[in-house]
Length: 249
Image (cartoon, rainbow, N blue to C red; front, top):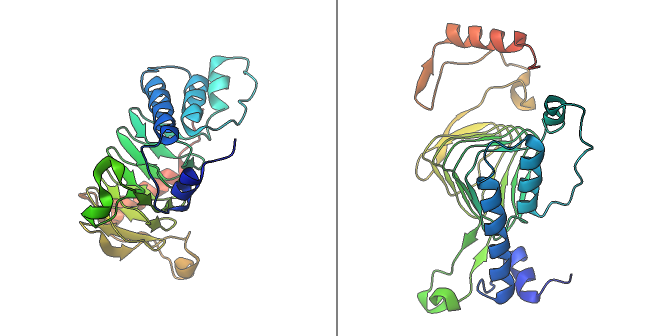
């Protein structure tokens, strides 16, 4: 179906009107599908995946049913894991990579595209605000005035702490960490830790995943992320344990 010019402006991040019948209906559809997902309880992974894809308007067909419930659940190991409740404006502007985990009470104001890369972890009560409003109140005009948005992009292998707010136009680079309670107003380079309101760079993440530091990387430094201190010896033991941890059956 051909999109209206107003909806195309929204998707492009230009001024548009949110309370047209078309967009009101889009938000009502999303609200209904979110409610179905949030009220699904302990449904099998197949059912939850189908319900969540309905929120995103994702028409990817599900794989054939496996022989046992356990085998069937494993078919969806790579699909995002989203703890309910979750709230979105439209759903069709949200893109999630493989093995993404999003904890409960996530909010997506997806006026524009919000993308989250594979293996990224998102804590509880995190808000992604891609929508914004004109600063001039004579233009804002409540529900009668125009609004706009900017895309949000979260890279692969990131960790977003609880109660974080990410504002329009922000890109968070691969492998970066956002401390709990932060408000991210500007883009974050890859492999960095940021925290605060507004979020500021705290340190570089030393990792063999980063080509810039792989040559001289010698191990994890002492850390204090999220209030938990781990001395070097304990972190070495932790990393050794992780390396020998068997895959879950």
